[in-house]
Length: 424
Image 1 (cartoon, rainbow, N blue to C red):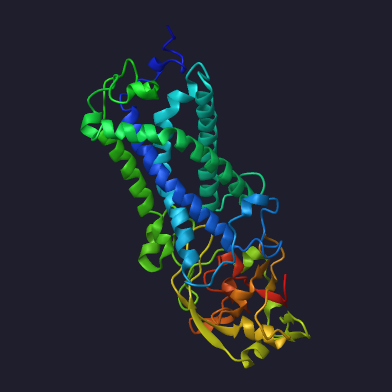
Image 2: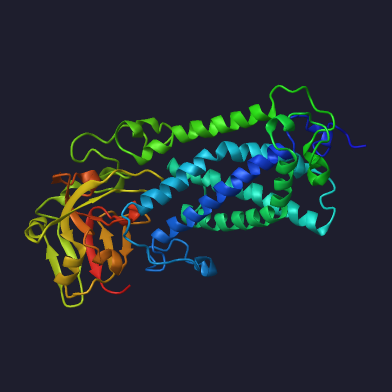
């Protein structure tokens, strides 16, 4: 008989809440939620157009894992705002569900023998990869949202490759376990039925008996109550996160996000930013009217334009949001500047073409970024000089910045110094 003092003994785990019904409900919620997370995560990666140029590709060794990539569209202009907002907000909302699910199956991690059959060994391996992958993906994702890069290496390849390992284990585990989970739910149709006791019950003879304690402790909460606690935790995280995708009072409800506080000042430039001019090392002497020049390179010539020169070109306006990989976004701001396709035509490209944009910023993964021809050709894609009726502030990219519909914020380069048009 196994020693009940050891974690490998079923008697060590005494909570009467654990059981096949409780675990199955959490598992099915995660099945849907993690699938949405994976799809929106892939869409986020595609939005960077990594196949366009090496400067956009933060995972150059992805190989076959880039099979789904496509040219990111510019319509609808709020596309990235939606997909990345869902990705980050849902990920944070699912944290209590994930933790409860891991708690509910922890006895399986210590069960002996390690493998009773080939199928059981495969399930145990996928379980370990699933637990490790889930913790890695959620932890790195939360740290990225909080701008705390405590992990070694770049967030992009770590999160990207980790997602594929995790999702492969997730799919394998789902194939093995979803039929059993559905059977458990059919056999135990309500929480009331699930609360009949912690001994062997419906589903316990179907490979789930290791979740049910043979000597349960006195119950302090029902399984219905436990699910209520988990759901309440998720609702609390949702309520303190989703507001960062809006302006005004709602943003102030996002207390758990670094971008959830007050707007940066008031007036035309009083909307959310990511990195300030001071953080990026932009010095005032570089952006003065007598010092700053935009270099535009193309097929037939190279021109150097002052801000005054740009203001003499045909100016256009567009109402576009800013959306960032950390999940925050703003509502539409009114931008005014020179169309990218007009700048391309100025240097010999009558048809829209790719462009490499370089910033005065000297450091950072996206001080250089590439845009596709379809982005350059959109009439709303601007080299913006003004926003909301006023000149750009230093933190919003003065003297000039890129603004493109549906593009991630990091591709809307600020403090633009050079633009090179042509196929990349």
